[in-house]
Amino acid sequence: MIKGDKETVASLSQYPIGMSYGIASVKNRAQFLRRYREVFNTQTDAARCFTKASLAPDPENPKRFTVACPDAAGNEVVIYHFVQTRSGWRFNALDNLNE
Picture 1 (cartoon, one colour):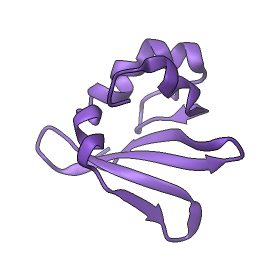
Picture 2 (cartoon, rainbow, N blue to C red):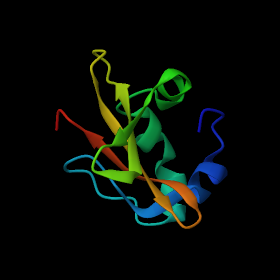
Picture 3 (cartoon, rainbow, N blue to C red):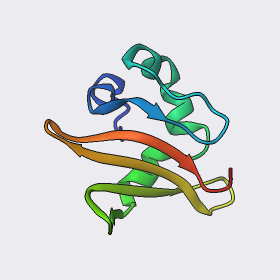
């Protein structure tokens, strides 16, 4: 994702990808490729964030973790969710705590 490799990120995602309140989920790979900028650039600069972000394990489920990224005001409210599957870690949701 940091390098902007949409195809690789698409293959490392689990569909449907849940989106912030009021935004339709990303249903499949083709839709993800079309909406890539919306997912990673509309609410935050995810590429910049991921270079220095800390992973936050889910204390209730070791097969999940999140990455919090800042919005335009600098508040870490844009949350990317990841889940461990049989084939490895997958991106599966985006949330904005302000919405």
